[in-house]
Image (cartoon, rainbow, N blue to C red):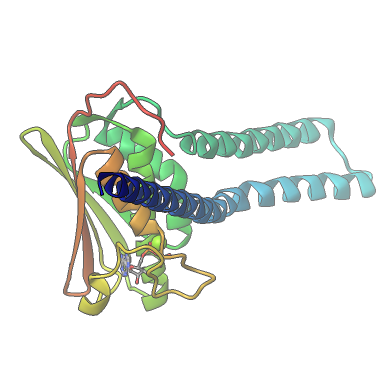
Length: 268
Ligand SMILES: Nc1ncnc2c1ncn2[C@@H]1O[C@H](COP(=O)(O)OP(=O)(O)O)[C@@H](O)[C@H]1O
Ligand SMILES: [Mg+2]
């Protein structure tokens, strides 16, 4: 009797282990997929950043070639053009570095101010927002600082900003605007991110943090952005994330501790 019980118990433990591993595998797969989705969106942003410098380089080389053909090449003009090309090439290479740094998850919490968050986000989405005539406004004390996993926090902002951009494009919003407000409350910081992109219907609102939930076509949405964002905020940043929608606006709230006091861990 006792032996039977022990065997039963062992098989139950084994079953629990199997299920646990299955869950872990599924979670890892989801994280991978969502990273790929974010990378896809980033490539779109790099394309925006690169459009202008590539046009300039093309124009300068064509002009120089034409001058050579017409026998009108002036050395000082050529030197000036080559210097301009060199400057543009530096810009292209710096963009790649910015994006690459962004993709390295932080191993330790870092100190960052609202001003720095603004600068980092502008570096990444600035051009793409500008090309789509979207205003991005930051409100709050620019010197407020927090100690957190910086890149993870930025990734969450980026997911939310990308969704706002999608909503603006889908609804052809007039004067598309995203506001990021920062409030301090005791040992926590509250970020409110509001857009006027049409809002989110109540029946959609209850599902948006679920994995694979998307109202977009397969090409445009994986449904993993907000699921991943919630996971990052809750599991890695020790905070919480919420959403509400009224009067054709959507507002995401992220509450994070001012300081994450940790020795560091491997993220992903
Ligand atoms: N700012 C927003 N305005 C309108 N709808 C939104 C907004 N943010 C999220 N959503 C809705 O939430 C869904 C899930 O978002 P997300 O998890 O990022 O997946 P995806 O963007 O791939 O669809 C979107 O498909 C969209 O319907
Ligand atoms: Mg998204």
